[in-house]
Amino acid sequence: MNDRQRILTLLRGQTPDRVPWFGDLSYWVGAMQQRGQFPADFQQTEAFYSLHRELQVGFYLQGYFPFHTRYDESVEVRQWHEGLDRHRLIRTPAGELHERWTTLPEAFTQAPTEHLIKSPKDLAALRWLYEHTSYECDYAEAERRSEWVRDLGIVLCYTPKTPLMQLVALDAGIETITDCLVEAEEELDETLEIMETHLDQAVEIALSCPGDALMIPENLSSEVVGKRLFEKHMRRCQHKWTQRIAGAGKFSFIHIDGSLRGLLAEEGSVGFTVLEALTPSPVGDVAMSEMRELAGPEPILWGGLPGVYFTPLVGDEAFEAFVVEVLEVMRRDGRCVLGVADQVPPDGLRERVRRVAELAEAHGRYP
Image 1 (cartoon, rainbow, N blue to C red):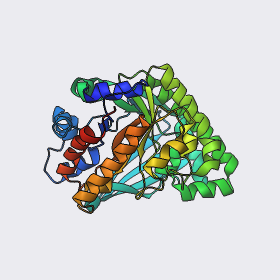
Image 2 (cartoon, rainbow, N blue to C red; image 1 turned 135 degrees about the vertical axis):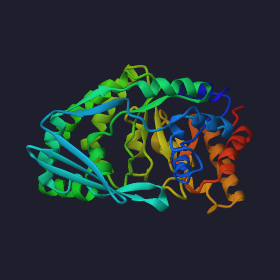
Image 3 (cartoon, helix red, strand yellow; image 1 turned 120 degrees about the vertical axis):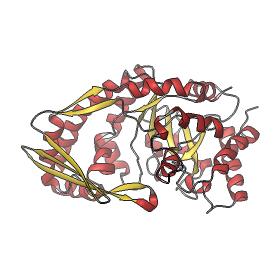
Image 4 (cartoon, rainbow, N blue to C red; image 1 turned 90 degrees about the vertical axis):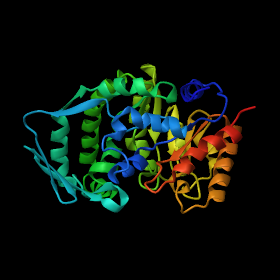
């Protein structure tokens, strides 16, 4: 079987020849682009997919939303850079919102150093923003990459995050959300309802994009959200969207790359085809051998290899022993995908990435 046959067989509820091996190389390759080791547009070219073939890594993920966001004339958006900082200012009749993201050159990434939503006082402007937002389809990238993916894997596109996770992960942070829960819970509830109504429109556009799967890119970690917030603000929305994805003939993924013990059972019961980027101990808080019992029998478990294992911080023998151990668990389970949890980091070793395919062939075959 090739990688596409292998993963589609598993997604359709059947058994492939061996445990599939799929990895997110975008962070690793992005760092090499910034170092000048690859052209700046490398990930937008067929050469990126050729690299996956060379390293024998199945392709599925390169963050892509199949829609554009548009604002009406009542919303003014301005963006600019100052040194390592990227600013965005949003002006609405209900108030102004400002955020700052700071580039961390040594980590080849960026992080919010000033959130868009800083207190309950900003919720009115956020509601105005969503009430005056629309979405337009943008399927060109999905169509383009499908010609390059072919036997390598699947074309996966993103929906938005659910409203709570949009705020927790990107726009507000959990500290501000906690303040809103204490000081203005009813107003927060209203804001989340308005956000969901409008994000539903983006999901509808995503449903028709050319591709095999749609991911809700939650970046969920259960020590941040917890069961109460999940049950009140996330389960219903996730279930609605997964049902719509299934109705469109696509497979549904959730990116759940943080602590697992608190919410793995809950997410396993929502209706996702795949729980993706699962990080086992000793980096995560659940052993690979425990995950099935927590997640339940239905979802495919995707992940297993923490990014640090691809770096010189872990010795070769420890790396190989860990990969083999995870493969043994996955082979016995029969409904798992070996993947990076969640990305090969900038200091990942090329020979480690290549070695995983060899270990999967040797230790991941089904009887």
